[in-house]
Image (cartoon, rainbow, N blue to C red; front, side, top):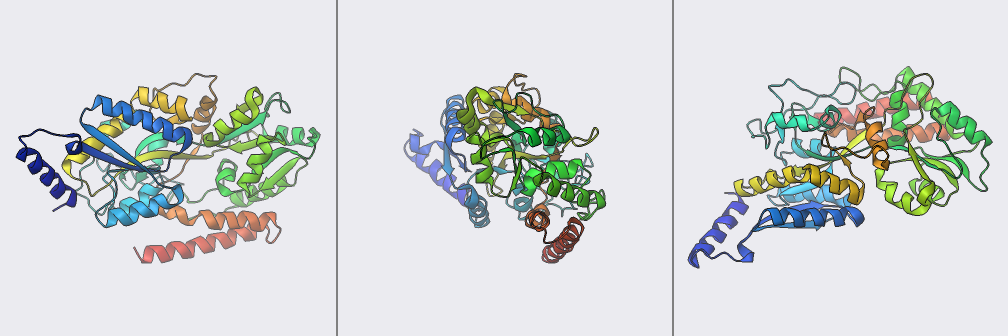
Length: 427
């Protein structure tokens, strides 16, 4: 018998023993684990208070856990029949957790015939519990964009409820850049003629996450249309060479140090930077009216960058009883009501995951929303985690001139193939 169910029966018998007079201690409690801080935490607390007012007798307990330990803590706790009712985390967590049988499915698309997304994912094993009932009817998928759902799909199922989306755009300092460049050629020409004392026109983070938009936009890929690993392509080699030339261009700093690029921009010593919505509040504080945001500059011709689209989402613990499952469903629905989505946008800069929640066209977040329409969904496939370190190594080997791009990507292909083979042999 489920531990929580036993505890629920004990609480019920205790309430009956005192004549059914419930106290605050007998109230239903919904537990949430998250890593939000600052403005996100303040907004979450406000939304929880709103939810509790709408659902008298329900207590929501939210525990803040550092982001770098949250996934491991949840995995260990839920595997031991513990953990929270709801986990707030990243969409790429859902693949690993669902394969371990630690999540309740949100949608089941088996009748729809959906599968892994071509070009962004390898094939995924079926759910450990094919008879598990999804939390929401498939019709509710219509609330979200196809790009958002693609980032959550694991085989024929979705195990995470989307709350907001995120991608990267070009931030610029209006003092140095009155009008943002529309193309990378225009950016490089501007950078060559812009002289900032002890600074740069562009501080570009060379981590694969930030470079990926141009890698994909130029034809590079991780997985081919057949779902098989295909990093080592002529287009990928070309884009790695493109990055090497960009970071050597006059006025451009290429760095793998996020903090360095971030500080230069906030200090006014970098006119432009590529970053996500998580940096918006800090940049608004640092630059004030001089802050500008624009879509990523295009590549040559009509080729547009296709940056990663990540999804902040809510996941439901598979070790949950029927009553708490009902509460979790209510909270998930509440968090994506238009009023809640508007509060998340205004309070902490989240980009609505729900279709039809409109942002003012001149709002900074609207730039991220427009950029996300051309982005690349960051797959929930657990195998994607094997790609990050090898791709970053290929970038650093190229930029340090240790290997030419073709050799660096060929080595990366073999390295990831070996790691995939090892993981799949143990599945």
